[in-house]
Image (cartoon, rainbow, N blue to C red; front, side, top):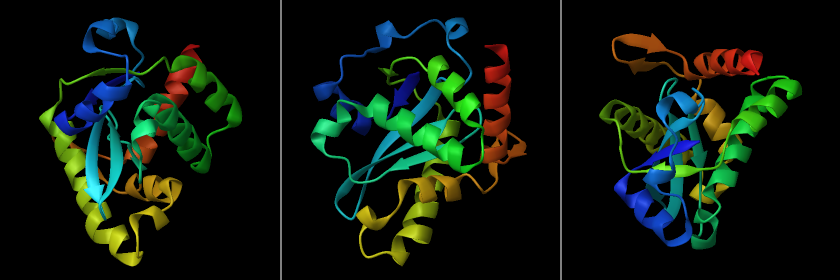
Length: 178
């Protein structure tokens, strides 16, 4: 899995992560499920991370990370991603095969403005939609928020897509190839 980090997230990961851009595989060696963007944002003075899949704009939200947790960000991402897909109703056999497809976390700082724009919109939806309903960001359920953020349309270029449906289709195609 290749994570394109914003500058803020890359600074956090530099202290506790051994991966670097040179260890990333060539584009044809990675699966379509492997390219994500990550961004660190502060909500209620807590460090939160949002991930956005490059092709489908599928968003994951991790609230309240502490410094030691950044060293194991790949595991946190994998667990949340698989749990969110399970909530969407994907069969456990698909999830087991998908877990085998996902490799170790590799990071770089090459970002795409379109994906970052989708991340910003998702962050605004969270900041002005879900966050005012709870007294503290730590009261937000990462599964519920991730599920909610993927049930809205996103624009990719000129096309309008639904992230949950696009990710489901992508996972099913990837699992069939294994």
